Length: 277
Image (cartoon, rainbow, N blue to C red; front, side, top):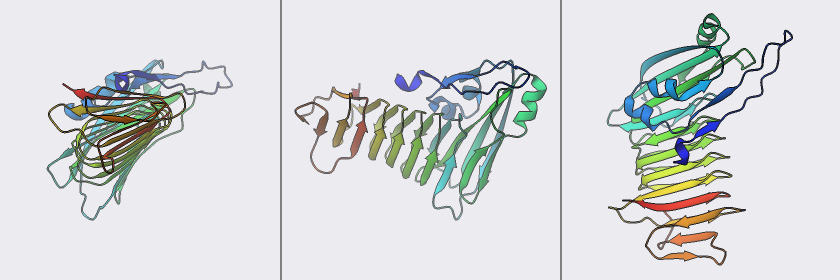
């Protein structure tokens, strides 16, 4: 699955005056659905890796009141992932998985102490020191929220995984992938170059990836939603549904069903539409 592939995240790091060797973050898994299922940070700690010699990890959990919060904003760190899962409680639970890497264990612990995830007035923000040739850090976030919560999510290079949500959700990422599963909500999702996976999504979806692939998986036991898909540039569409599909002459635009589309997909890469059997 393209959402489970390892994505190389190359960060140019300046060499110090003492000719300290340049270090790079190597990569991490983009699909963080397992993190929400496990409910802890082990998934993040074992699927993000680096060539720094020393690492420090820390996990913390907080209960968050959503009283008076109409829209919950989540802003991830540059390399951090976000996993959000709906549940039947009025409050939210946040699990923060912090990692810092450096040349020595002491330096890594010092960097870790500077990494935080704040929560104020409905805005959750990951922040920490600047990256350089001697250190790097991540703050991955696992959130349990009311199923009908309204969410606005921003990520950079980390993945975003959304599960069991029925509210209005906006999610944007630069190069990280976005996956949505088992959700009847109203989703507007966009990435610059990351892939998008939609798995048994029964609500309304507008998904745009400027350079990444999009996969839509429809449950075999449910009716097929009205779908409109467009592939620009060198992109292509692969549709394995047996329902009648209306194609344009170049097979760059396909429509399935009548009326306003429940699902709209747009990318300059590949679109795959299939059933889960």
